[in-house]
Image (cartoon, rainbow, N blue to C red; front, side):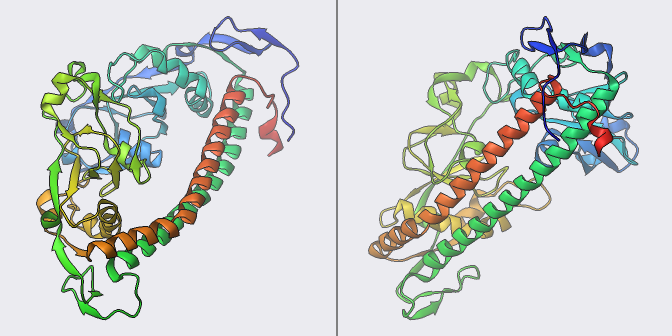
Length: 436
């Protein structure tokens, strides 16, 4: 289908929307939707299991998940009708999904605004609120003062002016976007799989080098450690706590989004800063002031930092002094342990570290257990040789990973642009569903 604009347009009178197709009607969104508010206390839920649209679940999978009722800690919203859920928290992340009542009691986080499509197409409503223009509109209305906890008022979500096509056009637009976004998402999934395969190849290369060395003819000995197996005869094995100084991050205050502690001169890294970096952390989004510094802990430049919650055992090297919360741990190598070698050892050790995280929770590594894990340690010259080898031989993998990530970014931008063009009438999709 050749994409073309509508024959004629008019000024919508809405600054952030601009011109819209001549026949589209300018309406406030709450004239075609209902804002659903049905709070429920977990103590009043009689079933043992609930279907829960939590923010982490929606961000990870695009939908909810089954949870034990006893694990639901605070008041939620009861979902009894099909609705679009839009998170009030951090609108740029666009935590949005379509919620459907399940056989079990269905609930969602109180951070969500639930909107029922009463006089419009539900799927069209989903794409409309998920469009880049809506993200920008909400982002301009954030009320919170910290960068990691920004919220918008509920009425900014469920009460705004827009231009709507007829229901028949809404159906065509939704059908088109369903088809095209599914095609793009399939491509994105393939590229993500390629990234995982390359990561596995990189980890295998690193693990071989830091546990077996570079000399294939060297005599080996049993390390006595299950995850290490045999190591070169002249190597030693030491626990993490005897090879490094371990520093636990800290942020001793609740609620953590209290504005009194933020926006100062001290970098404050989060688990996402570690997980999203490559080898080095070179940037940060959040800072603490002097009051915040007093309740946190500052890691020196050159610290190896590791996440012990969220994405367990992701590691990176700090290129600046930074504070960190208790979900991050720092490791400073003792004399005789090279920092870059330590970084590669921790990458190889990640499966062992993950095994130490309790299965019954969302995962939170015990620092004492981490400190007691054994790691391989050759002499300093061998460490430096291994680092040099790995930096040379992982360059091609890192380059390919970078290329794939760039293509993913371009696909995501195209996906966003397509949604924007469709729900603002930049392309004429009338009759599309009839062509399927």
